[in-house]
Every structure is written in structure tokens, then in C-alpha cells.
Length: 170
Image 1: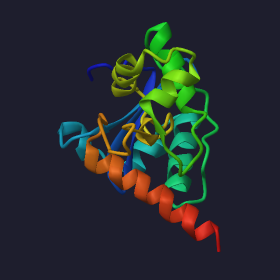
Image 2: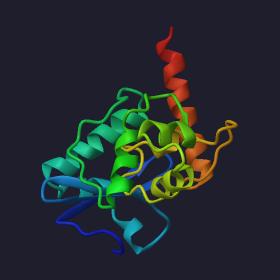
Image 3: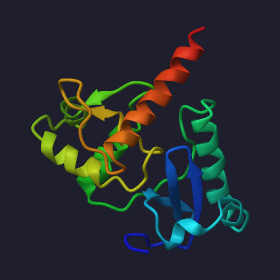
């Protein structure tokens, strides 16, 4: 498994594709969409059943997210990256569910307004998709730009959050 240094891992079948979730030393270190591969043949129930409690909890919380019952994740995270990348990823956690921010707003949040391109690069390397919500960052003009999981998934995740936000207002 490339780019996944782990003690344990499991697979979660989301409505938008298979997610591999990795744990190292009691921390979630990776959650990424997998395209069709030999790994995607593993059944979710077998994978989760044989996982440790952190991975089971991550799968449970992802399930709640996709059902619209969870807006914020409560998991021990330790994404691997540079100091700048980690600060960019940490800032993503402050974007509320169902809302978006521009790359400029994210750069301003970390007190580095000229780092717009660097923010985009850091977001594209976010190793913990959905849980660290880089899908909530859009272009200054409101356009959907860049998402390691694909723009269609980004659109679907934003629509999912928007639909549940709309339902909660009634």
C-alpha cells in the first residue's frame, strides 16, 4: 500500500466509493478513496469486524456523517506532512459543516494570505479525506476547484452536507 504507513487498516464502503482508513500508534493517519483495485474486493464487514476500536469508531462516525447524524468527527488524528501542511489541515477543521471557504480565506486563517497556492497544494495532499474536510474549500469565485477524490465527489459531499443542513432547518 503506497503512502500508507500503518499498524492496522480497514475499508469503509461510502456512498461515493471505497475508503481505506489507516491507524498508526492509536491515531488515524490516513483515510482516502480507493479506485477499483485488488484491495477493493475486501468486504467492509470483514474488514471492520477484524479492526481495532479506533478504526471501528472511524467507520461508525463516517456512517453517521453519511446519514446526516454527524457534523463533526471525534477521532485522534495524526496526518503525516510538513509543518505548513499540518497547519493548513488543522485550519480545515474550523470550517463548519455545510459551509465553504475559499483558499484565500483559508490562507488568511493561518495568517499567511499570500500562501493561496501553497494552501491548494497542501489540501490536495490531505491524507484524511472527509474527516479533515478539504472538500469545503472552493475557489474565490465560488467554483469547485481541486479535490484529490475527484471534483464529482467534492460536489457530492457538498450537496450531501447542504441537504442535511436544509433538513435540519425545518
